[in-house]
Image (cartoon, rainbow, N blue to C red; front, side):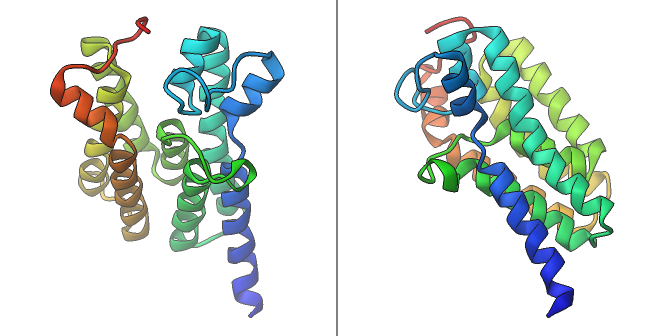
Length: 199
């Protein structure tokens, strides 16, 4: 029983930390509109960019990334095994998309997933980040960059020889990211998805 206590606590901390919605906190502190009620309705950095500008979007992005990274680093510091590290990271990601503090209505999880990957397997995180940057620079469509980076992640984990638990967690996050972007993918197919700086 005692052997399970620390892993369960770490997983719980991961989820509760992930549930801190950076976009909503930033909106309330800065006085901009609630991102759940305006713009795209998504409490994430891209919507904060629409509503409050680059500085607030950057703060939101960093906040979402850190809340994915820190629980994994804490678990690693405490000597958690790879399976526990992966569960902690996955819990933080699930906290972001289903936050207990905000009625289980969260964001799509791109930055938080990157933070989790940084803690679990930084080479794959680097591949995902570079993929996002390249796609964003080429097409200037945030969702296209996100779904491409998500699709690349499981492949990178395999090719870069991540451990099994990390690979499973990474694949699960990638699948959930793609599911969270269903409407964006449909708009991409129709050629209706907005670009940076528009709308």
